[in-house]
Image (cartoon, rainbow, N blue to C red; front, side):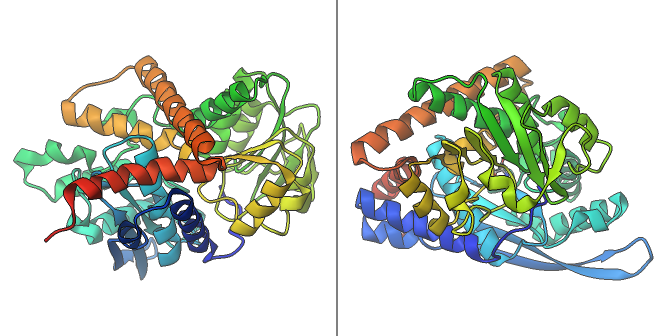
Length: 425
Ligand code: GLU
């Protein structure tokens, strides 16, 4: 999760390029296109936090709410040096398409703070997170805008957000607000299985792709960029399919073993290195610039946006790219991949397991229920497969690629709502 973003403002260009392309292919009503091309609210907060040395530092936090035609804004908060208003806008738009495609009663939002969390103590991160929550105030809420984990944010941080938000409410109503955030730890209203939901969904969609291609995942070689929550869980589930992990890249380095890297052993190693893969003894360190060109069948980018660009797309050998990350391929990179016949399982489908898990958590909290992990995993698999089928059908109806097809399914659902409700007043 620590691979540096190639170009800072590129993600917004990417999402607009994808949206404009889909709007053209589907013949989107130009009036509705105007609405969806804009973000509803862009919130920027500056807030002071006391550091461990007693000094005050002022942080800038973002929350962009793109669209809520289908329900409350939904999407993660990331803590990373690349967070800015353009990144938050792009990521919020992707959430709108993702929740719509998944058939959830949500819109899209995203936010975060521009910081490198490894530079702060746990106590500082707790105060930063609580103060950010306080600064956002009623810009978030369980029926209005529901954050969740994203790059560098954890279940523990979600528990702090939930506790801070609840603590500012009338004590008699406190528990009505626990689901202001999802991705909480299981002991604090979190969902069993939410931790693995994104990685699991990635592998369900890769399996669906393999079934559609009438092939199997057994003995297929795959490489993963990012070994955070998405990358490591996806690798563990790929292992269950009998696939072979041959290389992993993160900000600390790139490791390679053509005979296979055991994801479980690598996970245990990274638990001793603050998450870094560099130095794993059962693989060799290679030059990071060689990573995308490595021989493999499946490439799983599971780190940051704009990693696959015109600079490296031509070297890619994989038959399919499964987008665990949001926006990992730039439009220029994508056009090269398409000429090479490389298929893409688009982010808004491929990594939708996370927000689907969030939806189950939110429902569980609202209804005072506790779901078993078997229920969660079973429902999740069915729901991702349903989306996959919708995308395959739209791709054949519109004679287009999976990304454009996924956008069309997502946008149609929102278009229908606007057509039925009209625009106030
Ligand atoms: N951050 C995740 C995503 O990009 C999950 C969002 C959520 O659960 O709300 O989809």
